[in-house]
Image (cartoon, rainbow, N blue to C red; front, side, top):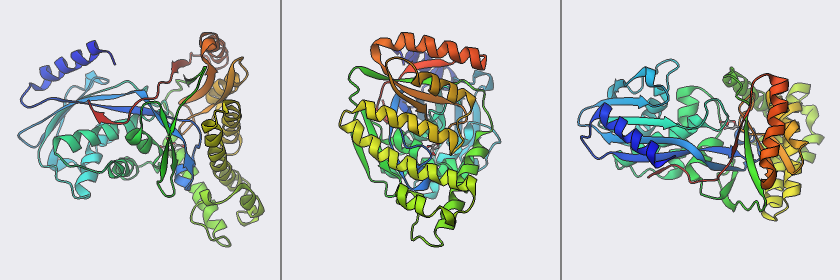
Length: 391
Ligand code: GLA
């Protein structure tokens, strides 16, 4: 974000709320997931990184119990307001629920939030882009509350409370991928996270002559949440059926061979496909991380392509928009691999592209997308930045 924009936001904050206390500034990133998709809630590995596109917040404590909020993204809503004692009352369809959810989750975990505050937020992550604008906001509020109330919440707990907000307050059964990537992100590093044990490893991102290009379908928001929850239930059901004979607590514990030898337990084609994706994608993620560390970007790229294919055919979470972007990208000169990133159904894909051909690449993929889909895609070159923090 430019200095000019920061200055303008602070002036807006003062205009709306006055400067009665110390105004503090915060930033929380978005994330991409390199590989390991829909594996987190199946006890597998993910390999995300936080990006420099994110959400910026300004906050100051109040001396009463009012919480006053303003989003630069929804200026028409003006200042929204509620009393701290009403934090547990959900407002249908409002972004305020992310704030309320984090307050409630922190309070339930025993942290004392005993005063109101003023808060201005500005998000640069395109909504419904699959780059985790919601987890970015959850963790932003997390660091704001942590700082304003001197809570000293351990980072892992803050990440878990972010996930709980999403699961229990917002109502999406998402795993820990987004909040973890955003809470633990570091400049120029990716995170290999085992979602079963929460053990993780920071992996330097050395792409040499290559860059990661984010391709946004710009597909209008669809009912992704219900589809997401459907995949969650399908893989849970497959696991349950496999547990009749196998001593496992998550699909992520199986090798591809063990899975293939036991599909009779599932006995339903759709459920087999869903579970196969979870198991194979987990294996792929581990292999991909090794190739990445060894600097074998060619092999890494092939695994990106295989991941997309599996998400398309077995998990069925891509759709024509993501397929057009990823498959057109895969065919371009100077591209090592491409796949959807995040939950799918719309949102973004990523491609590993030789840096000196990015302009030609964007033109070629952009033109094809416009021709097939009828409206333009958007492209950004990803920069890997730090996790949520006070500025
Ligand atoms: C969304 C969820 C994550 C993860 C991805 C798919 O981003 O929030 O927990 O399941 O989809 O990998």
